[in-house]
Amino acid sequence: MSFKVAAAPHGHSQKKTNQVMAWVVFALIPGVLIQSYFFGWGVWFQILIAVSVAYLSESICVWARERSARQALRDNTALVTAVLLAISIPPLAPWWIIVIGTLFSIVVVKQVYGGMGQNIFNPAMAGYVLLLISFPVQMTHWLPAAPIAPYDLGLWQTLHTIIFEYTPAGYDVEQLRTTVDGISMATPLDGVKTALDQGQILAEAYQQPMMASLAGIGWQWLNLGFLLGGAILLQQHVIRWHIPVGFLAGLLIPSFLAHIFAPSVMPGPVFHALSGATMLGAFFIATDPVSAATSDRGRLLFGLLIGLLVWIIRTWGGYPDAVAFAVLLANLCVPIIDRYTRPTVYGHHVGAKHDTE
Amino acid sequence: MSEFKTLTKQGLWENNPALVQLLGLCPLLAVTASVTNALGLGLATLFVLIGSNITVSLVRQWVPQEIRIPVFVMVIATFVTIIQLLMNAYVYQLYQTLGIFIPLIVTNCAIIGRAEAYASKNKWNYAAIDGLMMGLGFAAVLVVLGGLREILGNGTLFDGAELLLGEWAKQLRIELFSLDYPLLLAILPPGAFIGMGFIIALKNRIDAKREELQASEKTVTRARVTAES
Image 1 (tube, chains in turn orange, yellow):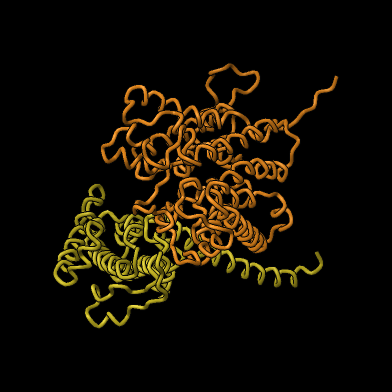
Image 2 (cartoon, one colour):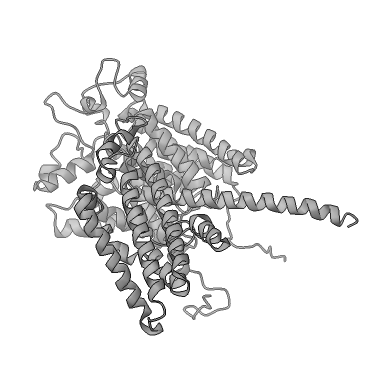
């Protein structure tokens, strides 16, 4: 009998980095299809721009750092970063938004820290936060989902809007969001939060036109699409269950308890689970292997922390959604999580004092 | 004379309080949203640094070792009060913009650092030069960072310079480009940290390049000397 001796970490998947990353992109397809069904062609243009900018800037950085460009470009990590950022931003955001965001993600958050595997922050989310706090107007202008959208934009009209910031007919994005009676349609998270802030109760907040049976129109299917993609990733062993389960537990348990105690003002777990970027965050963003915690227990904690932060910021924070902020904050906690969740070395007692230094 | 040369080099580049010692970062990061603010605080710090360095150096014989830090702080606080009252009187709007960061110059570690490390051990004329050069080095970084952030976040340079320099300075204002949506991040605190990181990286890069050049010159000469090896 022979024992194969391998160095830690003991990964069981035989997939190479580029295959893992290709699977992530593949698993995004159901979600992206649903997004393009409900929110128009914009997402495809955003992905196209983001991927081109990502590959271009990555090549330039790698060339400037005198590294092998072929290797860096073939590992598909830039592709994943670009696609994640592109589907996170509003589909009709002007082209320079996604260009600035992708440049920041790739050049500053990834390459300046040392390239693939060295970044301490999730590049896509750092780029998203840069955009959100720099250009809050463009970054929160989501159109209402297709069934309730006042205008139906074709391929050319969408492209025109992304390039020139208004449709061929002269409507800008703000006007596109406005219904005939002059009310801007917010995203479900934003709408419910605003209604609650104005003193309405949850039942009234749910009466708004963008709400559907479970959560928001379009948004609930979008989240289910990303949940399906997440299931593919789990089945393929591209990710493990700890981070998504931690994330969802951290978000859903507090929202469930809060909903029990204050049913009129605290949205319940179903609304939280199927709104905003919950599923995308739980399965695709928080599971970034580079900037997450290392051990299984650590990853569970890391996921819990993100979920809890998402719930806290959604409930009391200034922004409607919080996945990006929560992920960045949890990234900062990774060293301390790793330190206290180090697995017991074989042969040592559980709970024994480690020689920490 | 070489002491003056060393002090100049140390203050402006090799031991720059902002880029190398990383002292006084709080005001550095907080007020550099525009060149005018940066220059205002830079000049105030420069004045306090020169004044406190000279005074500390002059009284160094009579200050007991055990209570030197409180004495230094008192000296620095005196000069900060002077500059605060002067700014209140002559550049009132800038005084209001800089706000709490003028009194906070007292707590700027760069100043007490120079008092402790240099002025309390050297003659007053050297201490004055040291204060001047360290202050200039600090102010230069402030202005560079302020310029960077103002260009990115506002598309201008020297916006509001008349608050500091008087009416004629209105002509200094340069409008590089006008954006409907400026990069707010550059003006917000994270922009200060990111910009500062890039400036430090640039300085280290220049130093590394210079070292590389010197090293390559050295190897050439050595190769000739030990040709047989």
